[in-house]
Length: 416
Image 1: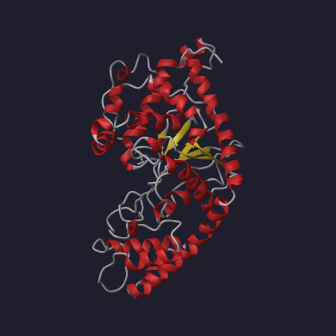
Image 2 (image 1 turned 180 degrees about the vertical axis):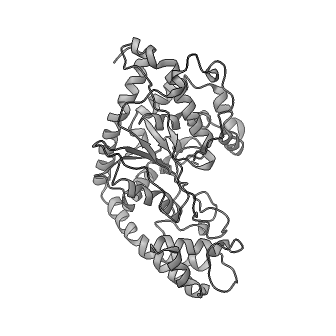
Image 3 (image 1 turned 90 degrees about the vertical axis):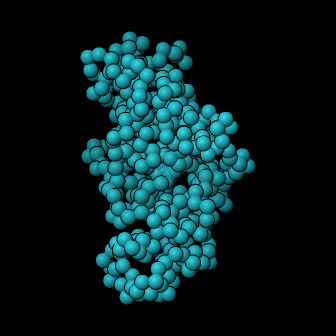
């Protein structure tokens, strides 16, 4: 699940995993007969970007189409993770968090902070715990309801790490060596100084997904390979250890894991940088001026909008390719205000920047102020936050342990 988001939603079912079609073939699938080649890349998958889940979801001017909730009494389950690194910004909120909040009303939801993914590159040990708590608090402040969603910390559910080790034994090294993200990040990090975790983190990502028997996974464009590895690994483990082999060991038989399918949100406008209308708003951008952070004070928001890049053309308009900054700022105003595109176009078509920027600033402050107030309340009540995370971890562990025990059994371990 760059290191969002993860953003990203994982749709999972409470029912037992179904035997995937690739496991019912007459013989051993050819891709398992010898070291697999490059993971297939021709599927339109989209979550992860380097070392863990993060909210790198695109912002759609219309809400992404959510999976239709089951008419049965058993709700589908949604799982998502985000790294405790960097500040959470407006693009994260509009592209992932807002949609997550809407889905929690119709689905059983689990949300976790992927602190294990955050250590794949050098990090500040003094800040990891603090950042983990802050990330959990800001998502709760945005509207994640702990009465509807289980909110927990990845490292507090040990099944994530245990399953990763078991999956690692079945993962050909060639699969990992061909991960483009590893090649790129290892070069940036300095060759021999790169930790093994940077190579193997896609296996941890697979563990994060497969533990909860995921049906669908929305993933970012730069993570196609990583979800495809998860799919291939699920099929590989199912073939090697599932079916009749598992049943002979006293297990249920059939598939151990569901093979997750991609969930593709509809294409739409993205929240772009305030300094470059052609670049996405990002946590990793070197200039803080490029983004609106959810916890930015009023004066900082006003200053960033005042100084943001614009153009000298008359009037304001959507969808002019020669005016990317104009389109971006109007889109932000539309999403923040809740107005339709037509309403915003009519309201702003004759405005100049001197009139529009204060309008946008006020709309941003009005939307973010309640989040900031709630965040401070949560951070000042450490007992409440600790309980939310503990309760969430306990619920998640019940689900994850059931999967993990099946894997141990299918792989022939002595029962505990």
